[in-house]
Figure 1: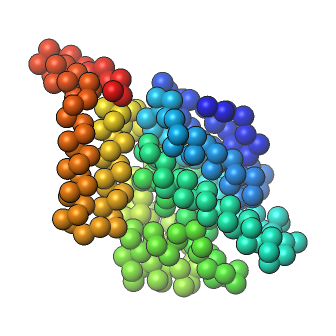
Figure 2: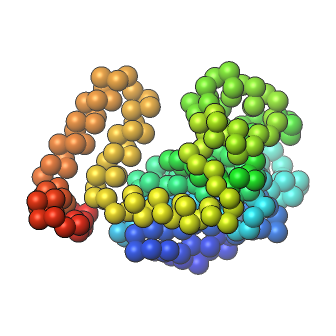
Figure 3: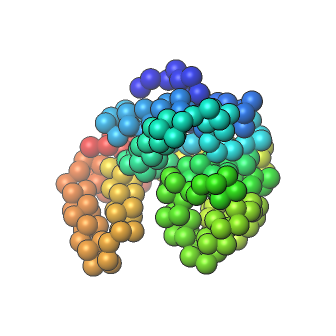
Length: 264
């Protein structure tokens, strides 16, 4: 896997954990075209070959911002056609993130506004620093959320709360996000990556084929009726019964030792 990107810092922090860090702190990690292209390449590469990566942590450099949204300086001189071309890249970037087969945890280290919040919403779950703030501010800029914000925020918070936040464009705190069910955990900034990595290690220690299929079953079920979703779940479940990792798990339990999973 490629590790050298213009706008990202990418590294394996553990044997099976990949950290992807937005690396434009001087502009509050605003999302320019290159950042979208870089992030999309990482996620698409994982779609093709996980290279034994079992969890991704998506975070950002510094303590100010996860991402303040689109880079408005880059957009200042864009024609309408150029704007649409750039947005097409942003759209494909979000789809690549949603389609990433391995679990992705967002570690929100500061403000997550507009496309920054939409990015976090497309991760599997979110941990946040206690000073983080969130908003979908697009209506203040003459546009509206255009990278799944109107789809994901209502699913996370409920329709009425999401309508209030999207239509006012007002920010809300990490504690609000926790109380409303948007984020899973709020911790001091100094502990954010340690807490996220601890959870990533727990996920990575499980049978990798199991986590891949469990993630996919839950994601697919959001767009199905319960009966059809259950049939998809059973199909995924039955494919795991014949795996080497399932046999290893049973043997390890009976031999009173930790299992050694190989993703087979």
